[in-house]
Image (tube, rainbow, N blue to C red; front, side):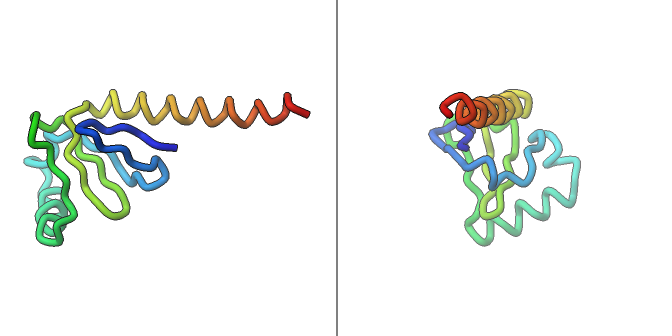
Length: 94
């Protein structure tokens, strides 16, 4: 399934490695270094319209999302629920 993470970016949920609060960027040297290295590789997609609230780490890119971690988690959980409903619908068709 797909998750809309803000700023017209939609990613596949299976590609998400982690979603962390943006405030951790300045307090974690590991995250800071990872973002720095990915910026050199041009694999960081940042919001130009609003301040980021979350960092979405995928297999290939790092996205700075204007949505909160809580909102992104709710969206991901909603997709999981919808997947389960789709799975049950197959049983009723038979």
